[in-house]
Length: 132
Image (cartoon, rainbow, N blue to C red; front, side, top):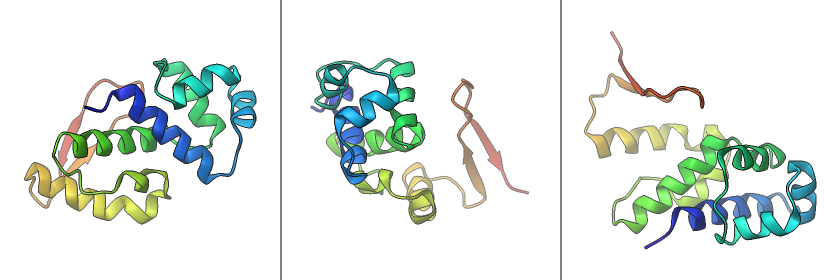
């Protein structure tokens, strides 16, 4: 079983390494101690939402990308396919948006004219909107 904190750490580390950045650079930019960032990346510490947001901002990476990556890894671990490889979450949104949307529709058995709208981070509702 993969722990959430481990999946988050793996996603953050992959993003940082893809940018060829050091722990020190990211920790300074995120205003997080180097040791703590290392612990988060190794899945030893739970990152608060504020800390996770700061790290993502320092990596110039949308938090939604990290969460998508983590949800894909967790779904694969649970034996369910989310339809997108785990490393696709750190790729530009344009390259994965359509395949991910199609996979989500298929996995959830939604009608073709149904869209899933993911709210802003501070919103706590999920709205399904049907095209007319």
